[in-house]
Image 1 (cartoon, rainbow, N blue to C red):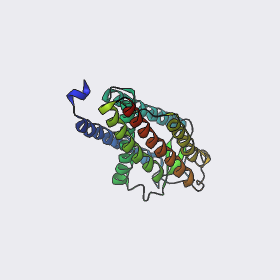
Image 2: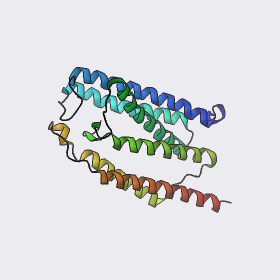
Image 3: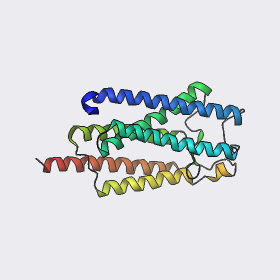
Image 4: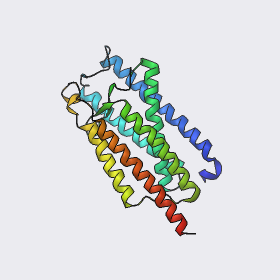
Length: 223
């Protein structure tokens, strides 16, 4: 029913507005945290948050994922277009989170600034450019998957595409959590493994291209 009421392009615009607003909301929380706990500078080594505040932060992160997933489910009708909408929402939200921080507190000063990306189940850390590159990829892939699914319903990733996606996730997540001690032990982070990021993104894009070819092959076989 959602497809007949709201055209695809308009849905993209509305969901993007929602994600941009969510990005502002999360940036506002970080602004308050900086004023309370990091008034001098938001830079490593970071002082640890009080345990009670840290637990609230973990809950907020989980709630954010639930909100993005819930909106994606509402926006789509099938499994894969819902997944595509989730990628789009997550990517736009993440990009604008950093844009809003830059506009409000002037951080990050550069794309090489380190950030704590996530706290579940351990702290994820990396330079800002890493999540931004992933977010842009998510937006592009999500839009393509959603459009392909809604137009012909033939987005069907094969086993090799799944394997590449899993391998890419291992590379990227390990690049984020391999230096968890920089947060836990209040230390300066070690040099980031950009090669792991590059390998992970290459796997993602390789799997994405293969999934498109696999879907096109299924479409031709059905004719």
